[in-house]
Amino acid sequence: MDFTFYDLEGEKHCDINHRFVQPPQVSYFVTTVDIKGNVNVTPVTMGTSFAPPWYYVFCLSNLFVEDWDGAYRDGVKQGYMNLKENPECVISYYGHDLVRESWIAGMPIPKGIDEMDVAGLTPLPSKKIATPGIAECPVNMECRVIHSLKVGSRWTLYTCEILGVSVQSDFVARDKTEFQGMGVLGIDPVFEVKIAKGDTPETSAMRLYYNRMDFDKLERCPEDVGCEDEWIGSFSQWLTDEQKRGKISAEEHREIVALEARWAENRDPVANGEVRRALTQKLRHMVRKPDV
Ligand SMILES: Cc1cc2nc3c(=O)[nH]c(=O)nc-3n(C[C@H](O)[C@H](O)[C@H](O)COP(=O)(O)O)c2cc1C
Image 1 (cartoon, rainbow, N blue to C red):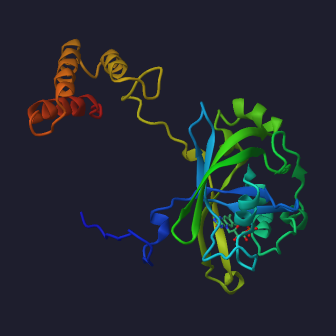
Image 2 (image 1 turned 180 degrees about the horizontal axis):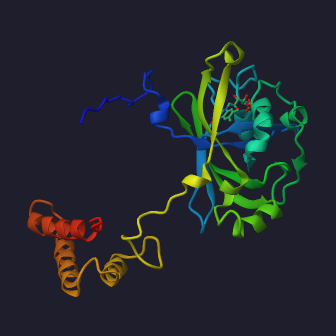
């Protein structure tokens, strides 16, 4: 198989299509407030949430700033400036019905002018922070920045603790039935996929393209591999369930357990290579596709 290698180390121009690295991501608004109380809304896609259900964190990597001298000028991201002054924000997922408003909010609107007013959106008072959310957005997450890291000369990576989330109650109810527990996917979110000019005279301006989820293409992972009651489980639970399923016999189960114990004694791939190979072979056999 032939591969094209792109060396991405350090900060330099590279002609890779960055979409090979950064997949389409769900879009959201980041609302911030400056020290004078002016609200700003930035549409963003870079970033995501992780760590639920114990601790809710949102990592947000955006807000370009190059050689910023601290003064406002056209092109300096206002969200970035506001988070420096006031490290809290509301992250609001929007659905397909707000595509126009999202595009308008991304326009170079002068600092201090509220994008919500310009785009016709409604502020939603927050419960835990002073920064408002957006009433038209089904999900509003109130966040406090707990860490920020300058990445290269252009980017800041924010880690935010999500302090609370307001979900439109209609979506909470429909999530249990219609949306099958898929949460934010029920709002018909949009994914930023590319920025380009179109092919016709009517579409010759530079525009962002969104894509949407196709629920008809929802797919379950293979039924013949994995635990019954947990999606990952433990190694021993996995073996037990594969045996129940008939993928391994009781004898093979015992052999795998014994091999795993011998491998755990010494995980050196050379000195204990034979055990490693034997265990790998047994596992490959266990996850084989069933004969059709
Ligand atoms: C859907 C969408 C996604 C965007 N994603 C990002 C992003 O991840 N990072 C970024 O710096 N700018 C992003 N932008 C561009 C900013 O929103 C835009 O530069 C905006 O004018 C900055 O606003 P601010 O100066 O009020 O913060 C995006 C724009 C849109 C419409």
